[in-house]
Image (cartoon, rainbow, N blue to C red):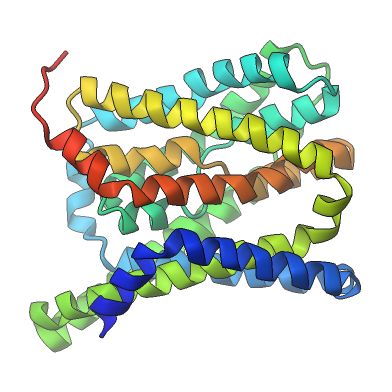
Length: 332
């Protein structure tokens, strides 16, 4: 039963994502006062949903294999290059071409330099990627954010003194990485000890179902929260949609080609792709709110909406991408 449900959800994930967007947007426009009066509650709801999206994937994580990731540092090194070298350069070019408002430009750059979407590990698991690699790479990228963020903002020429909320970063790592990893390992060991390997393998599709359902709930809640501002700022929405689409298309193409050139496996490629393209919009919103005007937070608030659609579309291309990486190619 769980296998059939998992297969169904994965097959129609893009359609269900669009439905979740529509439902969330309509409800958000109908009940804006509820959103204003319950911001903290809804923020906590998002945190809970994110946790229960990542936790099932962590049950599949074998911590004994994590140390093996460091024996193959190439994928992790490529991820750092994608996030902290290639992404800022492409962002500069897109800002120069499409974003002429300085505050929006700053907000766009801000969100682009903060990798580690809370859903990246979930996407990796759904794509059959290397979860161990994704988990370790996510942690290392988070550690480098407080260093790379102010560095690149300074390179851009900004005169702002950007506050880096270290506690927020640590809290995010704790909630989306460490706690789910710890509880997932305990759950995995408990299932294997009590029911054996066969029962554990039968339950794996259930974990994928929970992840996909939680992801759809997040999509719906994001649109529910941002419905009025999306309607009011529809021109900004269109402009940022174009810019983000171009960014993701370029990054996904670049990452796919480079990973193939460097002879990464399909699992390694999927282990770093979503981390290297998805952005931690929650952290970006918090930094923008603390240090700048509300306009700076708009890109971080809007971009995840298109990020979700495009990354789900890439997820739907799993078979094509797998065949591409299974073809023999020369090493560099």
